[in-house]
Length: 401
Image 1 (spheres, rainbow, N blue to C red):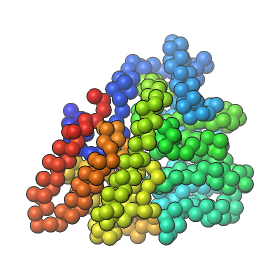
Image 2 (tube, rainbow, N blue to C red; image 1 turned 180 degrees about the vertical axis):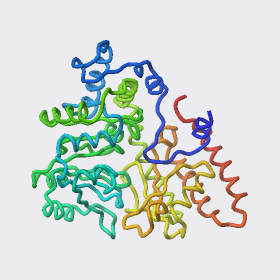
Image 3 (cartoon, helix red, strand yellow; image 1 turned 135 degrees about the vertical axis):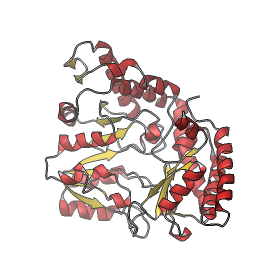
Image 4 (cartoon, helix red, strand yellow; image 1 turned 60 degrees about the vertical axis):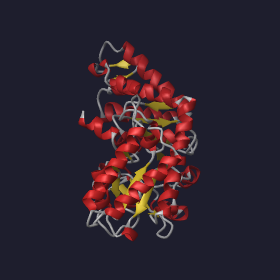
């Protein structure tokens, strides 16, 4: 398969992408896809769901144990539908909500004007400091007190530092707002103890089950509040969707089991070590890292000092087999489709078994691409870089083995 070959011969560095195990793939391709299961365990609308009930209950228990929560809904089809369910459960159309500005690293479902979250609700935003690119919690508090939102989102897609869940909780609860922590990017790190958990601070937690958790495309919604749990269940079904995807649920069961093992904790910590090693190596090549580094699995790079756009770099990297994505930097003067930055991370490379040593090689290859752009012998140099990328990738075959 062409895509299989591409993955085996390239470096996958998009922070939201990863490799799943063979067991996860097998579960995802199972006969669970043949069965409709509208409703919840023991309360289905169709017959023949005895085994599906056992499986979904098992996933719930594994999620609760892994993340230390009392309730988990494992039916959302993916991250955006999960976040939609939180709005549907806790807000009314027209309510004021709050999230990180997309331009500063937030997610489209946290209030982007053209998204459902910005159309049916009244979003306000918090942003990062213009000088440090870090969240200014004093500014967050000012915005919250001014607009008094019903729901506040903490979490991001392009923020390389930690979220202070406790501080967000204090700010949200000071005005009676719900705090929703979207840990889609960090779930695997949280499960492995490499990133702080929002449990105990958040009213509700959403996450995808892929990315750093290394499972199938899916999502979960978790809480310790019984009343919120009831509202979430009603919001997911029958509020927003019909029958869950049972093959997906089975694959989530597998990935949660894998994430509960000691080896996964080592993996989670290695992701962060690798990302910090990559940051150090790129700094040596004079790359301008937003916030100066990272505390998690991703890096955001401001390319203006390299005098090349994020789009140009993404396209150039793709030519040599390195996958990363163009990305806006905070307060970017360029448009989103041709931004000033790129976003890259280490979850997939770490799944391949790469360590700090290889991060130096990866940084070297990235710098080689940037330097080759526009050169007279660009095509020839790119050809050689691609050979080096393939050689490195072939040393670390991606799962499933």
